[in-house]
Amino acid sequence: MPAAETQSPRLELDDLPELIERFHVPGASIAVWQDGVLSEAAVGVANMNTGVEATTDTLFQIGSITKLYTTALVLQLVDEGLLTLDEPIRKWLPDFKVGDAETSAKVTLRHLLTHTSGIDGDYFIDAGRGEDRIEKFVSALGELPNLSPLGHMFAYCNVGFVIAGRVIEKVTGLPWDKAMRTRIVKNIGTPAFSTLPEQAMRHRTAIGHLGTPGKGLMVSPIAYLAQSNAPAGSMPMAPARDVVAFGRTMMDEGLAPNGHRLMSAESAALYRREHRVCPPGGSLDGIGLGAFLWNWGGDGYDVFGHDGSTIGQAAFLRIHPKSGTIVVLLTNGGDGKGLAQILLTRIFMSTAGVAPPAKPSLVDTDEQLGPYVGTYGKTSETAHVKLKEGSLYVTIQPSANYGVIGSGGEIELQSVGEGRFVGTNPGMSQSVNFNFLEADGDGKPRYLYSGVRSFTRVDD
Image 1 (cartoon, helix red, strand yellow):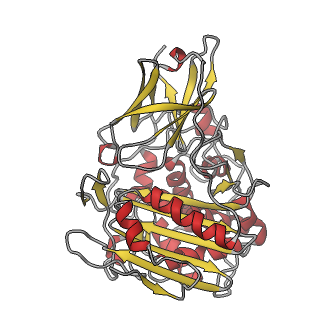
Image 2 (spheres, rainbow, N blue to C red; image 1 turned 60 degrees about the vertical axis):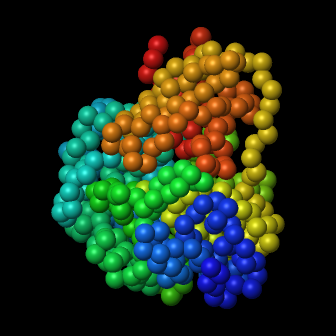
Image 3 (spheres, one colour; image 1 turned 30 degrees about the vertical axis):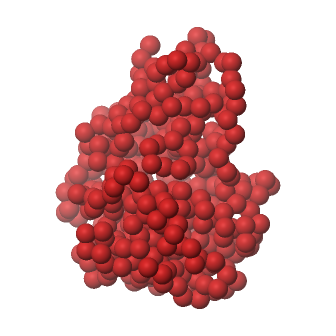
């Protein structure tokens, strides 16, 4: 099936059908902004059961790209003098409580939006579909532990953005999704952007697909993650062009394509200002306010954006301000990261002369591997690291609430430097980092950092 394109002579996407077959992606939609021109293409199917074609109008789940939108709501309220980034959130949520007393009392919106709260971030419960669902979710966090002390390190935290969503609700007097539609979606002119299934069903929508790429995929038995996690990205859907419009707003200092000022230039700059350096070799190099930061050109952070992952769907947003290039890729299963690596490299090399890093080089190591062996945990998953025949292996065991999007397979780890390893999940082309951090006097690390997430050692 040929790719459906509009205004894309420079993108060289004639091989997109072959690429999605190579990476076992059922359907994909891509939109690129460059030189004042929006180029779009789509290929494959939105749903393998129905065979409905994926088009440039198709809504895909954007996952955690939503975090940039939630951050925009916070920044609007900061501009209006209704919120501050550095006061404890108990100013607006006086009964807020998690398992750690210091975090409960001192955590700020800046901690939450930069993933430095230390709170165990992958806590997924379904608090229903009522307008009080986010309030109920936050009220259920009273015993949720920290993985690390407040402000100690970057560790990806979905929960933090749900908490931020509740702060937004308290200040605006609106449910998060209504605040999003009235303050963000309407003002940037992207009416297809949907925060609820009943909105999305008016459009052509993509469903996620699960399974091992190359061994067969099937439509996900669960269409959406819980609505109570929506501020972190469980629910929103959009066509790729709508996400480009939001990316243009961030790139253009808070000014939307339709001329509406969404936030001040000072607030928009916080997206791409480094708040914390991240461990090397991971999915990002640094963290801004809500945004991932990358150094592709070797001279500081030159690219920002976010990734998104839901049940069987993966989304990618990259913004290169110097060249004015924005790329949004939306996929609904298979090896979306492998497809993204090819397309992002091709497009950004053409438009900006930069590209995402290739796979890291493996190195021979004579370091002692024994101290890395152990069990590392968080609420959603447990990582079991073993030593077999001179090599490390890790098995990620998902909890009951996380099993639908977990793998559980054993992965061999290969060294890329002292304390740093990579491994590849079955059916995937892109390796994942495994960094062992903060060794004690016996050389045993306190943390295992993989992808963007942190596990805390739970054995002695």
